Image (cartoon, rainbow, N blue to C red; front, side, top):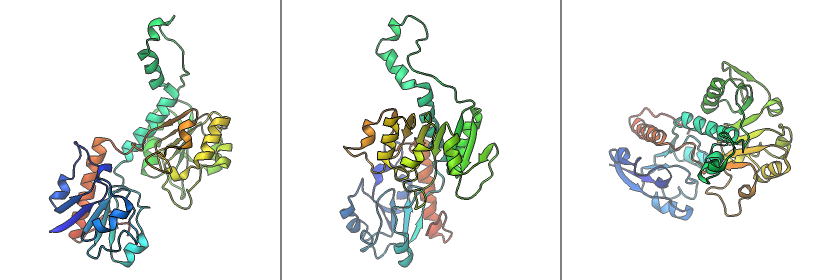
Length: 316
């Protein structure tokens, strides 16, 4: 029976989504959230490791002599030392596009919150202020239509395309830039500079890599409209947070709505906590119940397929 070690189970599981499917495959050792210095010993006798964000490198894997497979509760795999895994015959498989609809939905929830001010209007009512309003429709916070506005999508993968589809349903204009040209109905392909200049909303959906690291910085924000909304549901590393703070405080851009930070959980002194016109959610775009259930099916099938000799979603 294979031994399956989960290194950061609490980042995926709760009372509604559990590791039950994995327990049908072998002996499961479930750790809530291991510290870096605890990982090596915990995976030492594992045949399979499944993780989300746990760093798997030469140090944490040095004792894992039986390890044949690392599965990810994620699409991104920048926490895995791919070169080490290749050198030691360890197959790495990710979870593919399990969260496409969920992240696209969340991106638009952030966009709609900015333009409709739903939470602020609800608070206005809860504070008893509507009861004392002179009119039946108090115009306390601005409301704006999405129709006719230009959405700029950076990264036209599965999530970017799903976001474009929603935008088109709202009768928005959609422009996009992608590392390689990709034809999508209703979407105009433009260069990055032109996207920044034309967009009322810039929404980021690219992976974090050498090309995208710090992509959104002082220079980038300076090229956007002063009325623009910046949305990031990709990775925190694509943004220089001090530069975003400065852009918001100076009015270089109008607002930001983000679901990811460079360091997570948020640090005590994270500068964006003090930024004006900045909505922050705690990296939950990917986490609806249905999405995590789909994730578990993919992760479980990946392990089955690997042991059946037909591996799927292989990244190394």
